[in-house]
Image 1: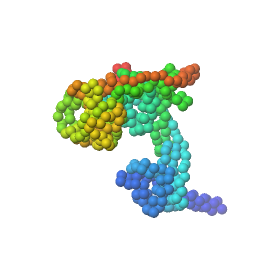
Image 2: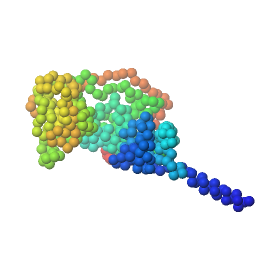
Image 3: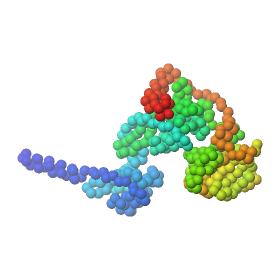
Image 4: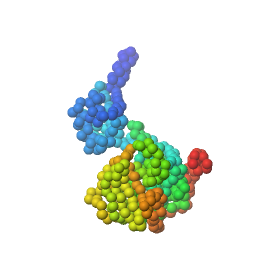
Length: 397
Protein backbone atom coordinates (compact mmCIF):
# COMPACT_ATOMS: atom_id res chain seq x y z
CA UNK A 1 0.00 0.00 0.00
CA UNK A 2 2.85 2.37 0.92
CA UNK A 3 4.70 1.56 -2.33
CA UNK A 4 1.54 2.32 -4.31
CA UNK A 5 1.12 5.70 -2.56
CA UNK A 6 4.75 6.61 -3.26
CA UNK A 7 4.32 5.63 -6.92
CA UNK A 8 1.18 7.79 -7.28
CA UNK A 9 2.90 10.72 -5.56
CA UNK A 10 5.78 10.44 -8.01
CA UNK A 11 3.37 10.49 -10.95
CA UNK A 12 1.73 13.64 -9.57
CA UNK A 13 5.11 15.38 -9.26
CA UNK A 14 6.06 14.32 -12.77
CA UNK A 15 2.77 15.60 -14.17
CA UNK A 16 2.95 18.91 -12.31
CA UNK A 17 6.48 19.55 -13.58
CA UNK A 18 5.36 18.77 -17.11
CA UNK A 19 2.62 21.42 -17.07
CA UNK A 20 4.61 24.05 -15.19
CA UNK A 21 4.71 27.39 -17.03
CA UNK A 22 8.01 28.34 -18.66
CA UNK A 23 8.92 31.99 -19.15
CA UNK A 24 11.20 32.61 -22.13
CA UNK A 25 12.84 36.02 -22.30
CA UNK A 26 12.99 37.61 -25.73
CA UNK A 27 14.98 40.65 -26.90
CA UNK A 28 13.87 42.62 -29.96
CA UNK A 29 16.85 42.61 -32.33
CA UNK A 30 18.12 45.36 -34.58
CA UNK A 31 16.00 45.62 -37.70
CA UNK A 32 13.03 43.84 -36.08
CA UNK A 33 9.63 45.21 -35.16
CA UNK A 34 7.33 43.54 -32.65
CA UNK A 35 5.66 41.28 -35.24
CA UNK A 36 9.01 40.12 -36.64
CA UNK A 37 10.26 39.36 -33.12
CA UNK A 38 7.18 37.29 -32.23
CA UNK A 39 7.37 35.33 -35.51
CA UNK A 40 11.04 34.59 -34.86
CA UNK A 41 9.97 32.92 -31.60
CA UNK A 42 7.36 30.49 -32.92
CA UNK A 43 4.30 32.75 -32.97
CA UNK A 44 2.43 32.64 -36.29
CA UNK A 45 2.48 35.86 -38.31
CA UNK A 46 -1.31 36.19 -38.21
CA UNK A 47 -1.30 35.77 -34.44
CA UNK A 48 1.61 38.21 -34.08
CA UNK A 49 -0.29 40.86 -36.06
CA UNK A 50 -3.34 40.39 -33.81
CA UNK A 51 -1.12 40.80 -30.73
CA UNK A 52 0.43 44.00 -32.12
CA UNK A 53 -2.99 45.45 -32.99
CA UNK A 54 -4.37 44.65 -29.53
CA UNK A 55 -1.35 46.09 -27.72
CA UNK A 56 -1.32 49.26 -29.85
CA UNK A 57 -4.57 50.34 -28.16
CA UNK A 58 -2.66 50.63 -24.87
CA UNK A 59 0.93 51.32 -25.85
CA UNK A 60 2.90 53.23 -28.50
CA UNK A 61 4.59 50.35 -30.31
CA UNK A 62 7.39 52.63 -31.54
CA UNK A 63 8.62 52.51 -27.92
CA UNK A 64 9.37 48.80 -28.34
CA UNK A 65 12.74 49.45 -29.96
CA UNK A 66 15.68 47.07 -30.47
CA UNK A 67 16.92 45.99 -27.06
CA UNK A 68 13.45 45.89 -25.50
CA UNK A 69 12.94 42.71 -23.43
CA UNK A 70 9.65 40.87 -23.06
CA UNK A 71 8.44 37.40 -22.05
CA UNK A 72 6.63 34.60 -23.86
CA UNK A 73 5.01 32.24 -21.34
CA UNK A 74 4.70 28.61 -22.47
CA UNK A 75 2.71 25.75 -20.98
CA UNK A 76 2.94 22.15 -22.25
CA UNK A 77 4.88 23.33 -25.29
CA UNK A 78 2.27 25.93 -26.28
CA UNK A 79 2.74 29.74 -26.06
CA UNK A 80 -0.16 31.11 -24.00
CA UNK A 81 0.84 34.63 -22.92
CA UNK A 82 3.10 37.46 -24.04
CA UNK A 83 4.15 39.92 -21.33
CA UNK A 84 5.42 43.40 -22.25
CA UNK A 85 6.92 46.14 -20.04
CA UNK A 86 4.73 49.23 -19.61
CA UNK A 87 6.53 51.21 -16.90
CA UNK A 88 8.19 50.40 -13.62
CA UNK A 89 5.62 48.41 -11.64
CA UNK A 90 3.32 47.72 -14.62
CA UNK A 91 3.25 45.19 -17.47
CA UNK A 92 0.80 44.32 -20.22
CA UNK A 93 -0.13 40.62 -20.48
CA UNK A 94 -1.61 39.49 -23.80
CA UNK A 95 -3.65 36.26 -23.70
CA UNK A 96 -2.86 34.49 -26.99
CA UNK A 97 -5.99 32.34 -26.78
CA UNK A 98 -8.39 35.29 -26.66
CA UNK A 99 -6.08 38.11 -27.85
CA UNK A 100 -7.02 40.22 -24.85
CA UNK A 101 -4.76 42.65 -23.00
CA UNK A 102 -4.59 42.92 -19.23
CA UNK A 103 -2.63 45.57 -17.32
CA UNK A 104 -0.96 44.11 -14.23
CA UNK A 105 0.86 45.66 -11.28
CA UNK A 106 4.21 44.40 -10.00
CA UNK A 107 6.08 44.93 -6.76
CA UNK A 108 8.59 47.79 -6.94
CA UNK A 109 11.85 48.14 -5.03
CA UNK A 110 12.88 51.73 -4.27
CA UNK A 111 16.43 52.71 -3.42
CA UNK A 112 18.26 56.05 -3.19
CA UNK A 113 21.11 56.97 -5.53
CA UNK A 114 23.64 59.77 -5.24
CA UNK A 115 24.51 61.51 -8.53
CA UNK A 116 27.05 64.27 -9.03
CA UNK A 117 28.91 65.88 -11.89
CA UNK A 118 31.36 68.65 -12.75
CA UNK A 119 30.71 70.77 -15.83
CA UNK A 120 33.36 70.76 -18.52
CA UNK A 121 33.84 73.35 -21.24
CA UNK A 122 30.84 73.30 -23.56
CA UNK A 123 28.69 71.21 -21.18
CA UNK A 124 25.06 71.92 -20.37
CA UNK A 125 23.64 70.75 -17.05
CA UNK A 126 20.90 68.78 -18.81
CA UNK A 127 23.25 66.73 -20.97
CA UNK A 128 25.80 66.28 -18.21
CA UNK A 129 23.12 64.64 -16.04
CA UNK A 130 21.82 62.67 -19.01
CA UNK A 131 25.32 61.29 -19.70
CA UNK A 132 25.62 60.29 -16.03
CA UNK A 133 22.23 58.60 -15.74
CA UNK A 134 21.08 57.78 -19.26
CA UNK A 135 17.68 59.14 -18.21
CA UNK A 136 16.37 62.33 -19.85
CA UNK A 137 13.52 62.60 -17.36
CA UNK A 138 15.75 62.99 -14.31
CA UNK A 139 17.91 65.54 -16.17
CA UNK A 140 14.81 67.54 -17.10
CA UNK A 141 13.54 67.22 -13.52
CA UNK A 142 16.75 68.77 -12.11
CA UNK A 143 16.56 71.72 -14.51
CA UNK A 144 12.86 72.23 -13.74
CA UNK A 145 13.46 72.28 -9.98
CA UNK A 146 15.86 75.24 -10.28
CA UNK A 147 14.20 76.96 -13.25
CA UNK A 148 13.28 80.05 -11.18
CA UNK A 149 16.67 80.28 -9.47
CA UNK A 150 19.20 79.56 -12.23
CA UNK A 151 19.45 80.58 -15.88
CA UNK A 152 21.10 77.41 -17.17
CA UNK A 153 21.71 79.03 -20.57
CA UNK A 154 24.14 81.73 -19.43
CA UNK A 155 24.98 81.35 -15.72
CA UNK A 156 26.83 78.03 -15.89
CA UNK A 157 30.63 77.84 -16.11
CA UNK A 158 33.21 75.04 -16.48
CA UNK A 159 34.08 73.77 -13.00
CA UNK A 160 30.57 74.31 -11.59
CA UNK A 161 29.17 71.16 -10.00
CA UNK A 162 25.82 69.65 -9.14
CA UNK A 163 24.85 66.88 -6.74
CA UNK A 164 21.55 65.24 -5.88
CA UNK A 165 19.95 62.19 -4.30
CA UNK A 166 17.03 60.63 -6.12
CA UNK A 167 14.87 57.54 -6.07
CA UNK A 168 15.76 54.57 -8.26
CA UNK A 169 12.83 52.28 -9.00
CA UNK A 170 13.08 48.65 -10.14
CA UNK A 171 10.36 46.01 -10.45
CA UNK A 172 10.38 42.22 -10.58
CA UNK A 173 10.15 42.27 -14.39
CA UNK A 174 13.45 44.14 -14.68
CA UNK A 175 11.98 47.55 -15.54
CA UNK A 176 14.01 50.33 -13.94
CA UNK A 177 14.21 54.11 -14.00
CA UNK A 178 15.07 57.09 -11.84
CA UNK A 179 12.24 58.57 -9.79
CA UNK A 180 11.82 61.75 -7.81
CA UNK A 181 14.80 63.92 -6.88
CA UNK A 182 14.74 64.18 -3.09
CA UNK A 183 17.52 66.68 -2.39
CA UNK A 184 19.72 68.65 -4.80
CA UNK A 185 22.23 71.44 -5.01
CA UNK A 186 24.09 73.42 -7.67
CA UNK A 187 27.31 75.27 -6.88
CA UNK A 188 28.82 77.59 -9.48
CA UNK A 189 30.88 80.69 -9.90
CA UNK A 190 27.79 82.75 -10.76
CA UNK A 191 25.07 81.15 -8.65
CA UNK A 192 24.46 78.63 -5.86
CA UNK A 193 21.16 76.95 -5.06
CA UNK A 194 19.76 74.00 -3.09
CA UNK A 195 16.42 72.19 -2.87
CA UNK A 196 14.72 69.53 -0.76
CA UNK A 197 11.48 67.75 -1.61
CA UNK A 198 8.91 68.01 1.17
CA UNK A 199 5.18 67.26 0.89
CA UNK A 200 4.76 67.95 -2.81
CA UNK A 201 7.11 70.92 -3.21
CA UNK A 202 10.79 71.88 -3.13
CA UNK A 203 12.22 74.17 -0.45
CA UNK A 204 15.60 75.84 0.01
CA UNK A 205 17.76 75.88 3.13
CA UNK A 206 15.85 78.89 4.48
CA UNK A 207 12.50 77.15 4.08
CA UNK A 208 11.29 79.08 1.02
CA UNK A 209 9.49 77.28 -1.78
CA UNK A 210 11.43 77.29 -5.04
CA UNK A 211 8.22 77.68 -7.05
CA UNK A 212 7.30 81.22 -7.96
CA UNK A 213 10.39 82.97 -6.64
CA UNK A 214 12.74 85.28 -8.58
CA UNK A 215 12.60 84.66 -12.32
CA UNK A 216 16.04 84.23 -13.86
CA UNK A 217 14.95 84.48 -17.51
CA UNK A 218 14.80 87.72 -19.54
CA UNK A 219 11.52 89.61 -19.26
CA UNK A 220 10.62 92.45 -21.61
CA UNK A 221 14.27 92.73 -22.67
CA UNK A 222 15.70 94.25 -25.85
CA UNK A 223 17.72 91.11 -26.58
CA UNK A 224 17.27 87.37 -26.14
CA UNK A 225 19.80 85.42 -24.06
CA UNK A 226 20.21 82.90 -26.89
CA UNK A 227 18.80 82.56 -30.44
CA UNK A 228 17.45 79.01 -29.87
CA UNK A 229 16.92 76.19 -27.40
CA UNK A 230 20.12 74.22 -27.68
CA UNK A 231 21.68 70.99 -26.35
CA UNK A 232 25.11 72.38 -25.65
CA UNK A 233 27.72 74.87 -26.84
CA UNK A 234 29.98 72.87 -29.13
CA UNK A 235 32.43 75.67 -29.94
CA UNK A 236 33.06 79.09 -28.38
CA UNK A 237 34.44 82.44 -29.56
CA UNK A 238 38.20 82.11 -30.05
CA UNK A 239 41.04 83.32 -32.26
CA UNK A 240 42.61 79.85 -32.40
CA UNK A 241 40.42 76.85 -33.27
CA UNK A 242 41.27 73.80 -35.37
CA UNK A 243 38.54 73.54 -37.99
CA UNK A 244 36.83 70.10 -37.64
CA UNK A 245 36.69 69.57 -41.43
CA UNK A 246 39.56 71.61 -42.90
CA UNK A 247 41.98 70.63 -40.12
CA UNK A 248 43.62 74.06 -39.99
CA UNK A 249 43.85 76.49 -37.07
CA UNK A 250 41.99 79.73 -37.66
CA UNK A 251 39.74 82.16 -35.75
CA UNK A 252 36.18 81.15 -34.84
CA UNK A 253 34.60 84.51 -34.06
CA UNK A 254 31.23 83.17 -33.05
CA UNK A 255 29.55 80.51 -30.94
CA UNK A 256 28.25 77.13 -32.14
CA UNK A 257 25.01 75.94 -30.55
CA UNK A 258 24.52 72.18 -31.06
CA UNK A 259 20.81 71.39 -31.44
CA UNK A 260 18.58 68.81 -33.17
CA UNK A 261 17.97 69.21 -36.90
CA UNK A 262 15.02 71.53 -37.51
CA UNK A 263 15.16 73.39 -34.18
CA UNK A 264 13.64 76.90 -34.67
CA UNK A 265 16.16 79.78 -34.79
CA UNK A 266 14.95 83.17 -33.56
CA UNK A 267 16.13 86.73 -34.10
CA UNK A 268 17.85 87.90 -30.91
CA UNK A 269 16.39 91.41 -31.25
CA UNK A 270 14.22 93.65 -33.44
CA UNK A 271 15.85 94.44 -36.76
CA UNK A 272 15.85 94.27 -40.57
CA UNK A 273 16.96 91.30 -42.69
CA UNK A 274 19.92 92.42 -44.82
CA UNK A 275 21.04 89.01 -46.15
CA UNK A 276 19.34 85.72 -46.93
CA UNK A 277 21.35 83.25 -48.97
CA UNK A 278 24.31 80.93 -49.28
CA UNK A 279 27.75 82.01 -48.03
CA UNK A 280 30.53 79.49 -48.74
CA UNK A 281 31.27 77.32 -45.72
CA UNK A 282 28.50 79.00 -43.72
CA UNK A 283 25.84 77.48 -45.98
CA UNK A 284 22.35 78.97 -45.69
CA UNK A 285 22.81 82.21 -43.77
CA UNK A 286 20.67 85.09 -42.51
CA UNK A 287 22.00 88.48 -41.38
CA UNK A 288 19.93 91.02 -39.44
CA UNK A 289 20.80 94.68 -38.80
CA UNK A 290 19.82 96.04 -35.38
CA UNK A 291 20.02 99.49 -33.83
CA UNK A 292 23.41 100.94 -32.93
CA UNK A 293 25.44 99.46 -35.82
CA UNK A 294 24.92 95.87 -34.66
CA UNK A 295 24.53 92.91 -37.04
CA UNK A 296 23.64 89.36 -36.00
CA UNK A 297 24.48 86.41 -38.26
CA UNK A 298 22.89 82.91 -38.28
CA UNK A 299 24.57 80.17 -40.35
CA UNK A 300 24.33 76.47 -41.39
CA UNK A 301 20.52 76.60 -41.56
CA UNK A 302 18.59 73.68 -43.05
CA UNK A 303 15.93 76.07 -44.35
CA UNK A 304 14.64 79.60 -43.93
CA UNK A 305 11.39 80.62 -42.27
CA UNK A 306 8.51 80.72 -44.73
CA UNK A 307 8.21 84.12 -46.41
CA UNK A 308 11.45 85.54 -45.00
CA UNK A 309 12.97 88.11 -47.36
CA UNK A 310 15.67 90.78 -47.47
CA UNK A 311 14.33 94.12 -46.26
CA UNK A 312 11.77 92.51 -43.96
CA UNK A 313 11.45 93.82 -40.42
CA UNK A 314 11.60 91.08 -37.76
CA UNK A 315 10.78 91.14 -34.07
CA UNK A 316 12.83 89.81 -31.18
CA UNK A 317 12.05 86.10 -30.85
CA UNK A 318 10.61 85.78 -34.38
CA UNK A 319 11.55 82.50 -36.13
CA UNK A 320 13.87 83.21 -39.08
CA UNK A 321 15.05 79.68 -39.92
CA UNK A 322 15.81 76.19 -38.69
CA UNK A 323 18.94 74.39 -37.49
CA UNK A 324 20.78 72.36 -40.10
CA UNK A 325 24.28 71.53 -41.32
CA UNK A 326 24.51 73.27 -44.70
CA UNK A 327 27.99 74.39 -45.76
CA UNK A 328 30.99 73.00 -43.89
CA UNK A 329 29.50 71.31 -40.81
CA UNK A 330 30.03 67.95 -39.09
CA UNK A 331 26.61 67.93 -37.43
CA UNK A 332 23.47 70.03 -36.97
CA UNK A 333 24.21 73.30 -35.19
CA UNK A 334 23.84 77.07 -35.40
CA UNK A 335 26.94 79.19 -36.00
CA UNK A 336 25.88 82.49 -34.39
CA UNK A 337 27.90 85.71 -34.66
CA UNK A 338 27.52 89.37 -33.73
CA UNK A 339 29.25 92.38 -35.31
CA UNK A 340 29.43 95.74 -33.56
CA UNK A 341 30.53 98.62 -35.80
CA UNK A 342 32.09 96.18 -38.27
CA UNK A 343 33.98 94.02 -35.75
CA UNK A 344 33.01 90.57 -34.49
CA UNK A 345 32.51 90.37 -30.70
CA UNK A 346 31.95 87.45 -28.34
CA UNK A 347 28.20 86.69 -28.73
CA UNK A 348 27.86 85.14 -25.26
CA UNK A 349 29.41 88.15 -23.54
CA UNK A 350 27.40 90.58 -25.67
CA UNK A 351 24.03 88.92 -25.00
CA UNK A 352 24.79 88.49 -21.31
CA UNK A 353 25.37 92.25 -21.02
CA UNK A 354 22.50 93.37 -23.22
CA UNK A 355 19.72 90.92 -22.29
CA UNK A 356 18.72 92.78 -19.16
CA UNK A 357 15.73 91.56 -17.23
CA UNK A 358 13.43 92.67 -14.44
CA UNK A 359 13.33 90.79 -11.17
CA UNK A 360 10.12 90.65 -9.24
CA UNK A 361 8.97 88.91 -6.10
CA UNK A 362 5.80 86.87 -5.90
CA UNK A 363 4.13 85.25 -2.91
CA UNK A 364 5.84 82.00 -1.99
CA UNK A 365 5.31 79.55 0.79
CA UNK A 366 7.76 79.27 3.68
CA UNK A 367 8.06 76.37 6.10
CA UNK A 368 9.30 76.52 9.69
CA UNK A 369 9.72 74.32 12.74
CA UNK A 370 10.06 70.57 12.21
CA UNK A 371 9.52 70.90 8.47
CA UNK A 372 12.51 73.24 8.18
CA UNK A 373 14.56 70.95 10.41
CA UNK A 374 13.82 68.09 8.01
CA UNK A 375 14.96 70.17 5.04
CA UNK A 376 18.20 71.15 6.77
CA UNK A 377 18.87 67.55 7.83
CA UNK A 378 18.50 66.32 4.23
CA UNK A 379 20.83 69.03 2.96
CA UNK A 380 23.34 68.14 5.68
CA UNK A 381 23.41 64.52 4.49
CA UNK A 382 23.99 65.69 0.91
CA UNK A 383 26.74 68.06 2.08
CA UNK A 384 28.52 65.14 3.76
CA UNK A 385 28.44 63.14 0.51
CA UNK A 386 29.77 66.14 -1.42
CA UNK A 387 32.50 66.82 1.15
CA UNK A 388 33.63 63.20 0.98
CA UNK A 389 34.36 63.73 -2.74
CA UNK A 390 36.34 66.91 -2.12
CA UNK A 391 34.06 69.00 -4.33
CA UNK A 392 34.66 72.72 -3.95
CA UNK A 393 37.58 72.28 -1.50
CA UNK A 394 40.52 71.89 -3.79
CA UNK A 395 39.59 68.33 -4.66
CA UNK A 396 37.67 67.49 -7.78
CA UNK A 397 36.32 71.03 -8.19
